[in-house]
Image 1 (cartoon, helix red, strand yellow):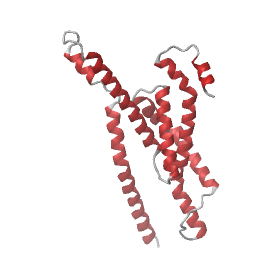
Image 2 (cartoon, rainbow, N blue to C red; image 1 turned 60 degrees about the horizontal axis):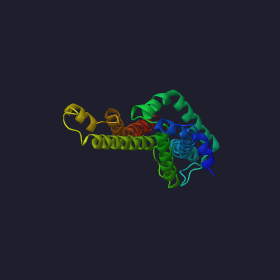
Image 3 (cartoon, one colour; image 1 turned 135 degrees about the horizontal axis):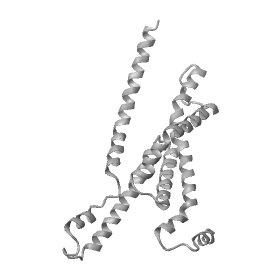
Image 4 (cartoon, one colour; image 1 turned 45 degrees about the vertical axis):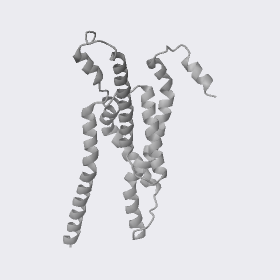
Length: 218
């Protein structure tokens, strides 16, 4: 059913990767929408979960085993994620989309689709995950695959060349071509390792502060 549509879209395109990547415009839009849906199903739910628990405790006067989620609570989450995207999203989008590795439409489609499937599967299992971390992991996967293929191709091309054909410096450069920026890799992995214990420490500090305030407020 899709073959005539693809054939029509591919008509007149050159047999180059850049031209073929143009076919992934609409699939990429679909995958991005699916990833946005997955983000709302998991990350936003993680954010409004504590608020829903507080609302349930206030309205029922106790802690319920299962908290009800009013519609306005989900609305607060939607507004919050929209404001966060508008205020702080552009910098993160640039980092994830362009500064880790080079992405064309085909590679971006693979990243968005794999991240969306992973997040939706985690949501179906009731696992709280970060769609940002998963998307970054998918980008690393695509980037390291590009790097592996590029280095293997270069090694095959230069394996039969004599030392007079290629200098040792060029041979080392060809063998060590890196298509994933290591600086961002180290920064992101460090952030993953630091943010969880940092959030736990802050939560403990806030909790202790509130307990102290409530005990001495009377």
